[in-house]
Length: 621
Image (cartoon, rainbow, N blue to C red; front, side, top):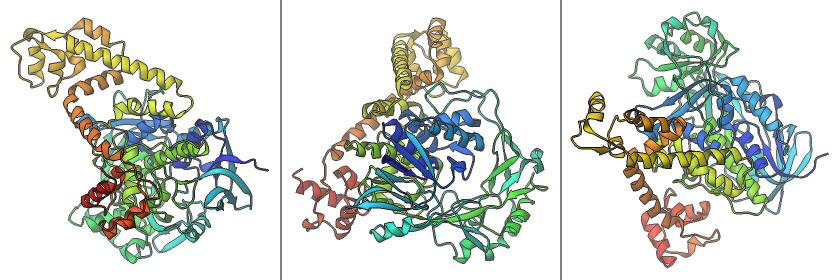
């Protein structure tokens, strides 16, 4: 019934969708297996993509040829660029999406791909021969062969849903848990653990009094996630902000004795940076209010997501507390919030390609690796899809470094440090933030995608070439054109900058705080006319490159210095126990993680600088 496939992807969430698309666009024949064809690319939690650091990840996926940015642009109901008041390294795009349109667009894209097939069933086991995966076994007993398998099971592995004292199996509300895979992997020697995440109640927007809330508009001139010419919305939906209060907190406390989190019924650790409302009240008992975001679920629905009110308390406690929040006094609830506990596999069991150490050609991506968030899952799926395809072709894996992408930071953190709580990406995790900006992901990564053979990049390459030419032209003009004091001093005074006494180059003036490239160009009409031939992103990138040139150069020098350690390779079979001077902890960690270079070894928790020096001496360096 089934032909052999190059790659089988198990699970069709954000990781699975990007994995299937990436492997197919690398020329592989792909089978996407999902328990429910109606929930492909389901936004299980909030209806939004991007945010601080997460937005950079979506842009990186797009620059490499992935689909998350395109789907988000074509289904968004609001767009905002966060952190505009800070430096460009912190600017992060975020969009509210139409939940149903998002899933439908993803499914349409996948179904339109000639190299992707689908099968609706649960995968209960893997086919393994001589420590190499060679297919899957489904719940119907079908054995489907493949060269590589990518597991993107999300929260479905032995998933358990909690609402107050009630608990029942499930990978998501209304959907069954997946069983069999964890047990098989553990029997093969894999280490597994439990984590938990949660979601808030869904509300009826018709029952909300928005006049008691603060309105949050989208950007007046919204930009895009994708570097392609995706549509820019001519209208947007607003979000709203409200707050909890002491009365809300007291009502919530009445349910603590029935909370699965406080009574110990939940064993897994939840996300530190996205805690439930009961966790916030317990941990931050000195605060008398917490901010909540009222987020629309789409254009054609009244369903509302109440961001910041994730809860697993009894449904009646959730409802009573909601009714004491400004604007929600008459609220109706579509369904309560819940917590979900699920199996994951500590990611120190993976190589940087996301292939497992124990079983060749088997890749893990997404929440199975202990991460949280659509964006974190999507980028892992994308990289696993690429590397599974490269493995099938017997080519070298694509490993993005910490200086090349936030994706590289995330995977490097997971593999080298592991995680005992759901891992979430922040800008603070990246040491080279000035290089890893949201505006330059195409310049960093599209050439890499072209080099490895990613298909359908023609439009991206063309746009990138135009952007590069535009940036170079603008830089040259700024370094060539000068302004006299009488031409520019009025503008300088208006933005709080000191006046000049001598003729100055535009490039010099642009390095000052609060000085805008476009406003400077307006003082030279002929230059302004030339600028109009370029899009806003090209102009913005040129401005950033010049304004922060000194910082960018310093950071690049650090990268070059650290890259020397990355170039000192360590063979996978290296016998660390044969070096007596290494600490016992270092020997254990190095043997388990199997770093590919001294640079990677230096980032492993428990491996000290002294251990690295010993390794360098041993290698004759």
